[in-house]
Amino acid sequence: IHFRKTDTKRLRERDDEEDEEGQKKTFTAERVEQLKQLARAPDIYERLARALAPSIYENDDIKKGILLQLFGGTKKDFKNTGRGRFRADVNILLCGDPGTSKSQLLQYIHNLMPRSQYTSGKGSSAVGLTAYVTKDPETRQLVLQTGALVLSDNGICCIDEFDKMNDSTRSVLHEVMEQQTLSIAKAGIICSLNARTSVLAAANPRMSQWDEKLTVVENIQLPHTLMSRFDLIFLMLDPQDEQFDRRLATHLVSLYHQTQADEETQHMDMATLRDFIAYSRTYIHPGLSEEAGQALVQAYVDMRKIGSSRGAVTAYPRQLESLIRLAEAHAKMRFSQFVEIVDVEEAKRLHREALKQAATDPKTGIIDVGILTTGVSSSERQRRENLANEVRKVLQSRAKGGSSMKYSVVFDIMKEQSQALITQQMFEAAVKILQDEDTCVVSAGNIRLT
Image (cartoon, rainbow, N blue to C red; front, side, top):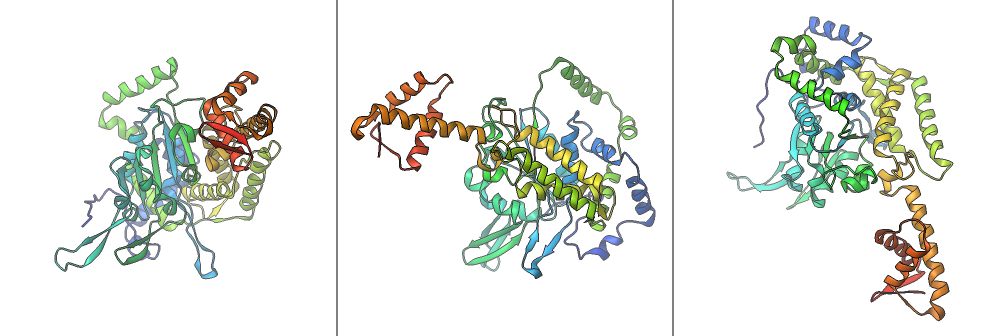
């Protein structure tokens, strides 16, 4: 049996949107009026972001992204028309250097939200995240016990050490993060469970320290098919700057000599923040206005146009859906029933900031979403094709009559001819392109044209 002790101060749980009568008794008229008055404040966005994990220094955009994740988008169900259900939950990935408060943020969100589950990548298995079959001790019948992703339905699943997960465990998340269901076929039990959860994951780079010369996919070594399912990917890096270090140290020291009264006067009451999010998630369901719809279309077209001139892809339909979800979440935060231009502008800004960090090609300094969707930037792909053409020319000129050449000899010739550095990995990728085109054959350390 899975159970969890809840506190009266925690956010109220809800099973589904239909459970409105029980929710209406939760908030008194005075409390609702207080929350609405708070939502009308012009600086409500900044105040809520500051109230989120106040002990963590700066990282304002990351806190705003997580804040919009807590509100979530508007649930849309078109199953009757055959279009299925659209995802309304926002997924966020935090990655960067050790000691940058990633786990602290996850623990804070876990303690704040209802139905939230906290799990670590190394200590999680595929059945622990999904479901497993066991025998009931009394009836001796096979029963299905649900895992963390199903238990966090309508909540948030916080996964720490995301990069330490093995591939079989991580493959479970593909269906959950897009279709928001979990298909089970075990021991004669075949079913599909709801997993309408937001995923908040934290990952460390494989070399422990973030390498500025490598892309996000190369640094974290996560499959690009999974990376593309995150709406926002934030980097939390250690800037190693004296002024920043001084401000951070001052902030940390001040936490130790602050009294309880000082903390209450500085930051928003936690109970207020919980009620604010709970009321918004339950009663506010904003729809797109005509102006906001046109602004979203224009934003997507502009994002596509940026990369089309140089052959790079800077946006996919998933990016447009992410913008819609973020804009709806921002409208929810204002207690507005319609998404307006101001919501779209903030969604664009936040999405652009995340893309700037995560999808920038380190060699060209240009945003390329292909890094997240295919794992390779367009400039790197072009470089590999050029190298493959050069290898083909060397084989045509040196290997007469279809004779073979030593693999290592061809590699040495390419290094001598090229002015730029050619690594073993780049050479192998170029030969792989030629093999895929059926241009050459590699066997027993030799390479020859077909």
